Image 1 (cartoon, rainbow, N blue to C red):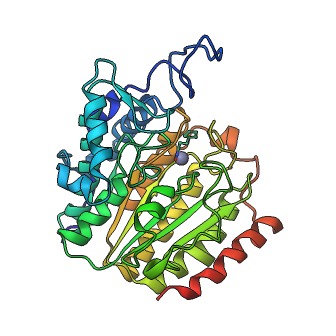
Image 2 (image 1 turned 30 degrees about the horizontal axis):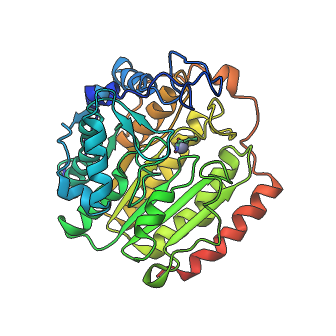
Amino acid sequence: MTSTMGYIWNTLYGWTDTGSGGLLPPSTDSLTQPIGHHVAHPDTKRRMHELISASGLIDSLKQIDAAPAAEADILRVHDQSHYDRILAESALPKGGDAGDGVSPFGHGGHRIAMLAAGGAIEAVRTVVEGQVSNAYALINPPGHHAERSTGRGFCTFNNGAVAAAYARDVLGLKRVAIVDWDVHHGNGAQDIFGGTAEVLNISVHQDRCFPSDSGFREERGHGEGFGYTLNVPLPPGGGSGAYEYAFDTVVLPAVRAYKPDLIIVASGFDASIMDPLARMMMRSEGFRSLVRKLVDLAAEVSQGRLVCLQEGGYSPIYVPFCGLAVIEEMAGVSTGTQDAYTPILGAMGGDKLLEHEREAIDLASVLVSDIH
Ligand code: 3YP
Ligand code: ZN
């Protein structure tokens, strides 16, 4: 057992080709003008990696190489037909789409998606084998919207689900908890693991942000999995006040009741106040306090095993500071770097829990009692 934190980035994660549309495909019919940067252009994640580097934090981390996932790793959680379609479209000269028409990938995109899933596996494997104390995998493309039979919402394969199934089937873990703080609903793990109690899937997200027809508290899993899907939809506008209350009264008690062997975080930074794809008000210090809670929780219930996997986050200027705060906290290192945006963003509110937020979160907290 070492106290060094693991960290994964791969140059090819910065080579995803999200196309020349901004969010929707460019078209003269719909008058969606082509644009230089798609909202999910990989520069945002590369800039986070560069702040980890420029701040000096990288010198305190153990860099782990991502190996591509094997086809069999993907097939633990996805249909063969989904895998084959991605492989086939990846071979086309201009690539294809992961499944919903807003998730473009370029020629060879399959290879990057396999490296992202493989990065998730390596992060989990090195933590469980004790080579590192915990890990952050800055992987791309993201995964948490990908369902068993399709990619969706910029996601090709469900990296977190692939890693959780690997932990269960290959590493022999009995229980894995997924805590999804990406601002969007973790519908993929809900689809894949909704019928089993071997994975606890908790998603804290902006109510009806994306997908707009899922993520409701009433979706609780089915059969043996009933109770092990836990959705915490938050009203728009919430910041660290709402998130900390949701963690203290729902997420932490749920994970404590479940006693997992590993905690995987679907770590998106799109709940930030600067994000174009949601309307929440988190800042870097808010994310730092959330991960602090999870580091302490992991020490209590899962032998410290905590793995963060990158999901969304679309502010190229602000995501890097959120990521730096989270990784500093996990590593137990302070680089002394200040969040340069605090003077602008710090006094805009959102740090106080509001009554309507408390009401929504209290309604979710009663669901914890069904977890054993
Ligand atoms: C996918 C299409 C519209 C919203 C977008 C959400 C992607 C994301 O960050 N998911 O976590
Ligand atoms: Zn998201």
